[in-house]
Length: 112
Image (cartoon, rainbow, N blue to C red):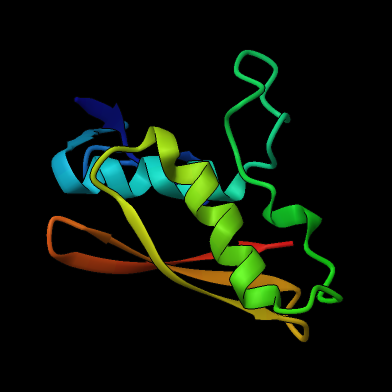
């Protein structure tokens, strides 16, 4: 599969200024980032797309564990990508999710 590269919520430009295609591990990480950052139910054409991370308040018994559960649920539709850990930050009102795909790890920051 391939997708158009995204950066900061819009198409990422190549050297010629036009959007470009990505595939493989890069495309999987991008799909995972979209699934984590979009609130579940916000995309009208696919209500199941997204995560429930935006529901975190910090008042959960273990916000990090709740965030990891929500992240893993959001990534069910992204084969080959695993959420390894999640950390809730009350100060930054965000969640950092560490992902693994094809032996590579990346962290996605989700603003709440």
